[in-house]
Amino acid sequence: MVVDAHAHIAPRLTGFWKPRRYGRVADEGVERQVLPPSFDPPASPPEVLLGYMDDAGVDRAFLVQHHMYGDQNAAVLEAVRRWPDRFVGFAYLGAFDQDDAADRLERLIAGGMLGLKIEVASTRRLRADFRFDGEREWRVFERLDRLRRPLAVDLIPSPPEDVAALRRLLDAFPQIHLINCHVGGPPKGDWEGRALLASHPRAWVDLAALPFLLGPDEEYPFPSAIRFVRWTVETFGADRVMWGTDYPPTLLRATYRQLLEYVRRRCDFLTEAQLADVLGGTAERLIRSVG
Image (tube, rainbow, N blue to C red; front, top):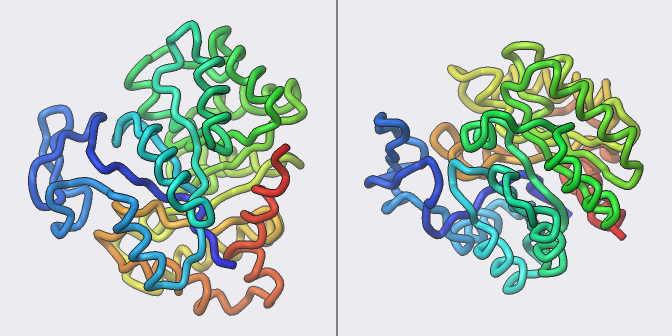
């Protein structure tokens, strides 16, 4: 079983990225390339992701969200409904500024979402005073804890205060398990403090986008990312590590197959059992742990 633990779909971009043509978007008055030119108009339909997955031999993907793409809850739920064996969905709550946010989360989970995803940077663009230990946010996490569902967080480029607040959250809510996306987002800022949040016994990490965070000028097979995969497995254990791609923006630098093969073929320090965990076993256990 091979699971991509971090991918995005968006049949239509509705967030900060305003679609132009040939993979280019406008954001805050600046136009740039965020998707391959073949993505025209810029979007990420689930059928295209399935094609890449089938070509590379990937069985399942976690569909995560943030406001660069916009609210894709309906699209993610439809993908989970149409392809229940291929997709797992994570809910999106925008700025966490609605009084019924906890109820919305429960409805989304009842509709088929596995858990909740928060990307701190785009969330704070929507609401600058977002806090993991804020009163409104706490009500959402109380509900997530009662539902016994996981929380995925993208902490790039969060300050140490966010890490401390997440540790308090995990202590307060014993049924929440945490996915630390991008291993906390190395190498900028206090990356190690963010990464080591995954030392908590109820935390995992995903390896999404590491080739582009760690070696933006490197080509396949991404030696800096390979070294960091070793550090991650040695630090947390393969049973807490999940492979992921951050599809589709990462296709600007590599093929989908290369994003898999740098781990599957080039991380030769992994034992057979460790590789099986990283490529899908850990993600499958996370899914089974819900409930």
